[in-house]
Length: 215
Length: 236
Image (cartoon, rainbow over all chains, first blue to last red; front, top):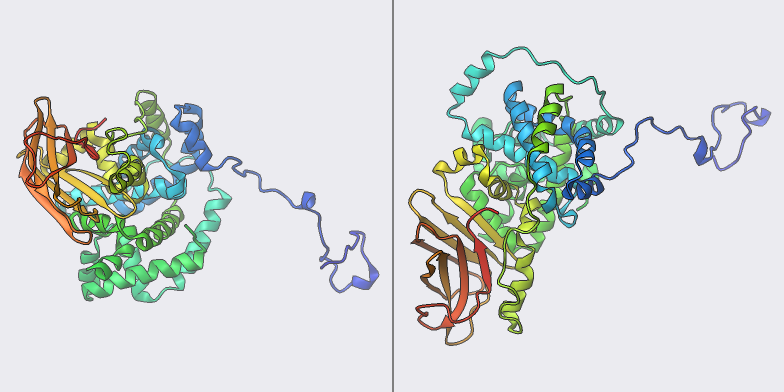
């Protein structure tokens, strides 16, 4: 495709009329590309910039709320925990260190830990089931449509999860999305502890490689 | 033990360790550069799993968060204060001073659970969580880690450290709990580089700080050198 072909058509290329090289300015830009890195926004937030925090909120509320809800399932409880996470992003932005990892990972780790803490502080599993039974209807959602970024991420994760062995996938799924400890996962899958430990690690390593994650 | 702990990187990144194992793993992590890299990568990976679960947040969340933010003070950027320039010029101690300055900043990413507990000291939710369990503070350098857990109810303190260089010949490390009435000795220890040191003691109920000094063998009645590590037991 190295050859420049005029859009009005070249008779010698009539077999492939749609192929032509384009210049960068011709490539359509996605309508909503976030221009500021989350890390840079957090730096502003750390200095008390509430407007920057609102932009951070817009970027991360979907991922934070979605993950918390995936783990907790109960919408009201999820909203509560998501609020704690978001406010803690505000409070502790002063302590975010980009050398230790990405802003998204920092925030999502916080969200996940918080959701899991909540699961584990539940009085009993029965309690949780009872409360779940009482809440069938979700609250109204924001009209904000999903960003292109998140859609792509979701696709990639789905594809990469498919590349895991069943035991790896189940271990990662039950631990991360299910909020179960690896001991519980071993119990649920009826496999030895050591097996779950290594499958969880192998699974995440395979995902890391498939998703091209570097630290 | 090291290999076994190393295999927990996945479970740690997936948030699947229980509290005790998490503590052990975090202590191990501080002295294991290879694990740190892997944990960082796996946390980034796990975060993508999280992003993939994104769902539109209810509109009420936005207003609730922004309202709370408007009345919430941000934390100061430094949590652990170190006795400034302590033991400057003494090689192993200087290294401690330098590395420990960044200690809780490091925690803010890699050791999510701890940071959270530390940060949320003042929130209602935290008081519920910590009413039963101990209050934990950790600090770490590239090849060592120290952690203090204190029970609010019984004033029992557990001090754990790993990877510290041994004190000079004829010297020992001494642990101090410091409150409004000054330092209170909590015993001495002579670590070897590879061993885990664990000390449990009951401290004065009003202790706000734990400090380590190097003292002559047998320990001193009062600290005779500047502390090379200071961990604040209260939140900022």
